[in-house]
Length: 139
Image 1 (cartoon, one colour):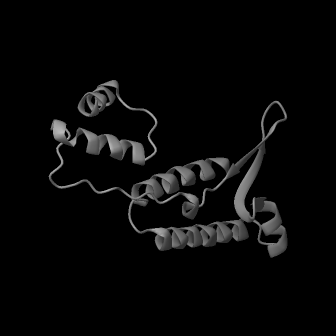
Image 2 (cartoon, helix red, strand yellow; image 1 turned 90 degrees about the horizontal axis):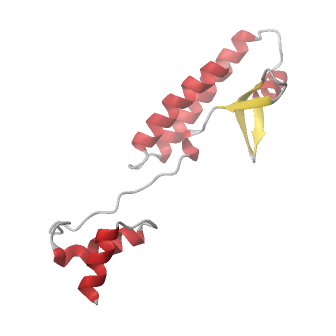
């Protein structure tokens, strides 16, 4: 079961990261519903004589306010490790900021524009060359 969760998380995370730059919250919720339905179907086949309540308590553990499909595995040292299926709707949607059509990163007159773009996006790391160019231009 843990191998299934690992493989499923790889696919879901890759798909969600690829599509998170477009309007995709509705698609993410559809994917989450699809994954839930298929996991539920698999668990029902695996335990045909168990009640729905038992299945839900066994496989859907609380993580915050939501219940997420998870499996607890004991390691050799007796430590319990929990594997959870990620929810694609929990992956944040990140929009791209458009660049001015005439802006050229190699043109010194646009150095201030690109410096402000890097700072506005929350980037704390500036390359030494661009910071030096900025100070030289406005000093």
